[in-house]
Image 1 (cartoon, rainbow, N blue to C red):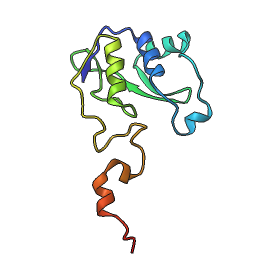
Image 2 (image 1 turned 30 degrees about the vertical axis):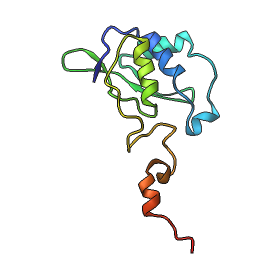
Image 3 (image 1 turned 135 degrees about the vertical axis):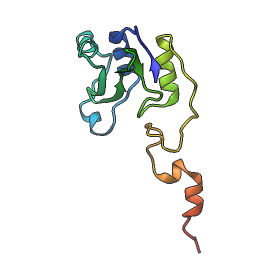
Length: 131
């Protein structure tokens, strides 16, 4: 977990929203532009920082308090690339060890394709003969 204690939660909510994109049925009711101040404040002051789908965007950011009372972010950001997470953390002065791009179990929008696109060896192993 990444210690983000002291982070401006309103600004963080806005940044999470800005870096997230509509997914699935969320594209039917997605809104363009920035997250408005009132909604960002509602998220920040809800007691537990929880952003799942917000106005159709798959934000998927959840902050938790650890046993020492520190506010912590996860090591990776579900449905987002490692680059997106690095930019989000850097915007607030935090960093972490860079993860390899697109691990085998990646769930980012770029990797939610057919298995052969994620695993070249799958395509070789399951190739259909052309004879």
